[in-house]
Length: 448
Image 1 (tube, helix red, strand yellow):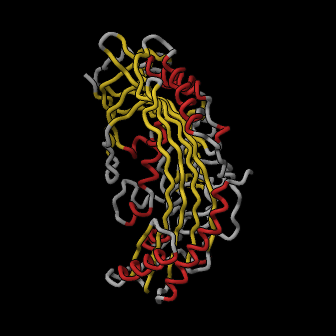
Image 2: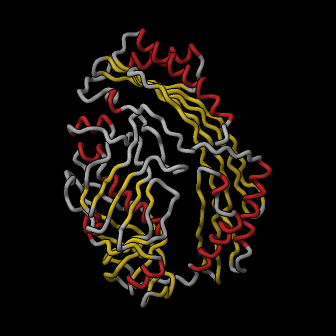
Image 3: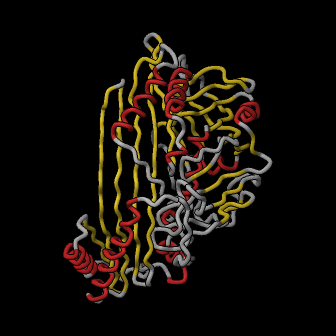
């Protein structure tokens, strides 16, 4: 793996973290944790062939949390000088004196911390110049605009490249860091026919720039998607099967993950409260967390508390195996951390024997709604009630019949998860949750 220039900053950031830990110890803190980072990035947006925005940023910062017994104080700064770091520790210590005691406060337990740090191939530098970025974005948009004469306008094509170096250390002796990159390309286009205008998009997001989808292909896909939405109509209110396209299914699964996070559980604000050991999905469904996938968007050798990330089965044969926990929420629940402080790491949704290509999903659905866009935030995490504006395509006899817009889909998430019929093999790898399209047997569709 090519060494990035930023990786040479890891020793410097380790020195900053060590300085803060030493200062906290000198001030009598019983525990301390420090997170230092250096981030830089380039983003270019072109609209109708002209440069709309060109941004370069370079940020750095250090965050300090100190514990005096069960009292906690935190402070941060963007200045990594010796005096600034010492002042930040002093501020955190001062804050801790005024906070209430919390029996669950404190660092992750020493035995849970990562000791062997695998190389997950997360750092792939891209020597992208502003001129190259503008040229790629311009070519991406141009390819989309030439798809059809009905593609009449654009909200722009954007290309971005970001690199981050992070070092985390605590007073249990943990001090590790790594560099990572993320690169993206997106395009948003508008199609028009008469007075009707529709917009749609496409994007690619990767760790390694060599894995980016071809820039012209991204533009063409955005144009084709916008074009396909012309002629949309409303449909009458009914109950019918609903197929969530893969890029939206990730969010659907995300609501389940939100409900089993430790915070939602100990606050008793979850529609899946105390659901560990219960059947929450059909017996053919499996959720497996794989934190160490090379180049994975959500891969990480350790979580935000330095806890080792490990493979785990979160849902087995439809039965929830446990929760998504950091050390604080784990203590609140009388459990052990699962290494998920900061989020989930490459959750793979699978359905052995019930996974099928997208076209086969349409045939399995027969007649129903294919959802390709969702609007609004009508999801109640406490009750599981789900109601969102939607658009997409009406399917008849396994074939897309016509676009649909100005409708609402509604149901309850517990029932929706139990009523999953099949999963697509069209797995979307662009996020922390890897899933194909999801077919639900029935939902309420509110239209005319």
